[in-house]
Image 1 (cartoon, rainbow, N blue to C red):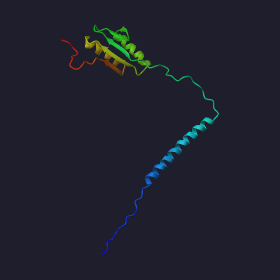
Image 2 (cartoon, helix red, strand yellow):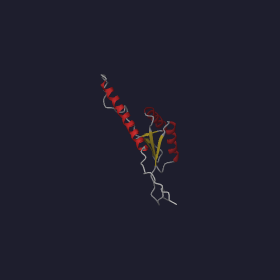
Image 3 (cartoon, helix red, strand yellow):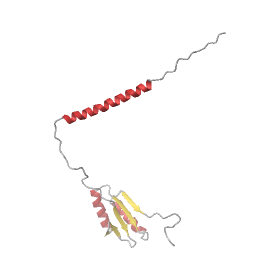
Image 4 (spheres, rainbow, N blue to C red):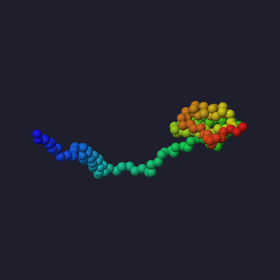
Length: 147
């Protein structure tokens, strides 16, 4: 009985994905050149456009306001001693000029917590959303308070 021998066809490379990629690249470059042609057409129109100076913000963003609460309860806003009502008025005035106003509250470790809470409540009343509290990180193995 003779053996049947099947001869396989030669292996071929599937070119379909390669052709797809080539067509996509052609379309990409055609669209890209079309945009640059429109830009050149736009420049060829005889039109005198207005000129302006250097583009800068009308007002610079203010730095974060720093509120220090001293051990005796005094409130210092950017170097000036103020009361809670003065602090509220000053923060509201600045907030009206710049909506993203930021505030840093720094309380003395020996001051009453009530003073810090009052300042934070005043900032909340003035609608300050960017409120930061400054603390010092104790080193490992050390307590922040001494006995």
